[in-house]
Image (cartoon, rainbow, N blue to C red):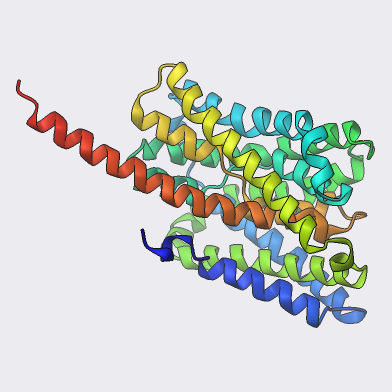
Length: 332
């Protein structure tokens, strides 16, 4: 097995460099204010472009496979939050309270879009259903995630979601998304032809948020509060959550009678959490909290899920080839 499969991708390397830059050269004062404005603008542009890119026809066409979509949404917005709350007595002692707050936020996030579809395709699953499920999860997450965060904050003794936070979500995320949907008839084709632009804005907005968040966190003494043993504990927490989600989605899909292609879709869409949605949402929802500790679990989970699912997708694909060959050689 090639070691390249386990190496971080370019974007993950960019995240590491950004965190290192914020650690050595954090922005402060007027520079921090400028970065805040740039970050807000980048997030609004990001959700506008996603609104313009998302095909309503694809969503409508895929919506007929409702059992699969409900299963994916149940894993994303029910299984993960329950795991975060029920496993808290076991997992919370491994990390700081601020980091576990980030873990709870992670559990409320929607699924990824790009990597869910990509891994489903590699594993030879139901790609059309993956497109619909991942897109629906991302869209519904704009509304569901803030509500789940509010409920889990109450259970965590942090107070519920304020109306100001909900209003900020609507203004900074939902309004640009709706505006993009409205503008889709005029610019949808152009956005589809320039997918690289969306990718650059996507990754650029995340890097901006990470830099500003970690700059503020470093100035508040983040790395003094998060020593190596605590980072190791966070790695264990994320690995446990992902392992349980992968097992439940795999065997749950089989118990519910789904075929192999649908099982693959449920596994890869139902076990993911979106860094692209999570980091911008964290900035809006946790304005009064140490944001560096909130986004650190998401960043770590992102890399763990990519490495794990890359291996899993290739195994699914290899087994599909084996079963296809066996079926072709079986006497009729």
